Length: 216
Image (cartoon, rainbow, N blue to C red; front, top):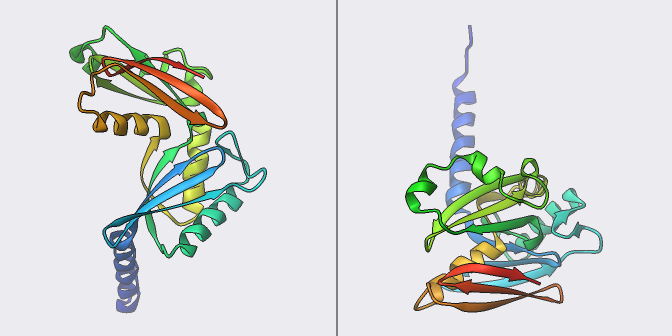
């Protein structure tokens, strides 16, 4: 028979209360990862505050963590140094970790009936078994974004080691695209979008709001 003392129950409830309070009081932090480092933004007294840091040599390569423990310590120490103790992080993955595809001629009804196999069988550069794939429908076209399984899991583990909550994970480019569309008076217009990254210019041509060309 299992017996618990009142003191042990009080301790358990206190632990649960503490966890809930830490979750509710955690500050929302936006963090964008790049091959060179990371950029953070958070609200302080109603104003956005921005801060950034560079990766030390060899700690992260092409968006993939090389030294997870060192990265966890670096990120946790950085947030502590800027006065953030406990954070709910909305993470933007680096450009190198993901890829996207756009398909025309698929209506919203057809999209609703597509299964995961359709997205996995799209022409991804590293094979479907190495990616998580998510799809969406916008401006009459099918969008699909694939993220490296290994890379995503590595970053999730790093934030777990840093004792930071991940409330949302997105891709830097797809998030920027959503933000860009939200700033346009006519999101379905034609547009030449230039993205500078690691000394290279990435040209994305949008026709009726849909990316049709993506070239370095």
